[in-house]
Length: 109
Image (tube, rainbow, N blue to C red; front, side, top):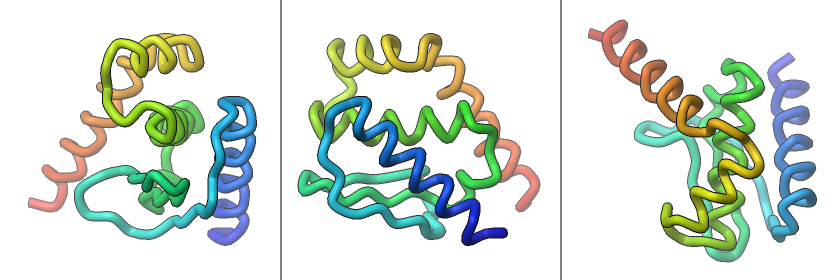
């Protein structure tokens, strides 16, 4: 089941990459302590495996967020406009992710 979820997630990354017209070299899913995802300028993407447990719209947020960084390295106006163009109210997704992190931190204590 986990390998199927990983395969589906990676498929979703490839689909978004094609839609956004960005080149992806490699996709990794693993446990990450401090963030949901990261990317390198060479197109290597790493996603936190706990994203597999989240609703599809939050997975899309993390995917699009990182893929856009392959074109735009910061969170400036252009990046924000593209996030909104592709995801609509992406800021509500960002807020939802932050709440999930906060809840997980509370449950660990």
